[in-house]
Image (cartoon, rainbow, N blue to C red; front, top):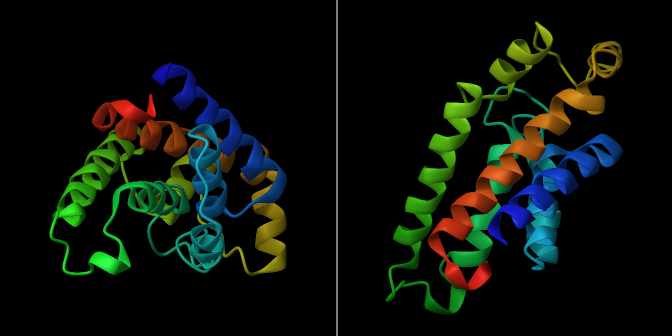
Length: 168
């Protein structure tokens, strides 16, 4: 059952990235949909976190951010328990780090621009229309970033299911 959910997360995140773009949101949506969970506010919050945050490509890959957000939404501390008496944040940190290591083992980095360079031979300024067009021509939203978001979603779901039997 767990493998099925991780594969479904891969397929959904891949499809969402190819169709809609926005790697943090598409990864987050793939994970949450595969696990039959939802968080409207977190999905919306992921909007500006694509392509290394704000399409800067300088920061963390949106697939990593989306995965970390999903883990945090599912297991993080609640605002009503800000003092964190159950120490939920430390469990969340542990799980996010497990996910991060799996992602790094797969791609060699968590940085958007380094992943772009590995996958497409260069880094793009996605806010520049001509560079964005080149990104698209090289498969940025056809297969390159969808593969990254799909893999990120799969790795996050595998981490979640490894730690929580009740979601299997």
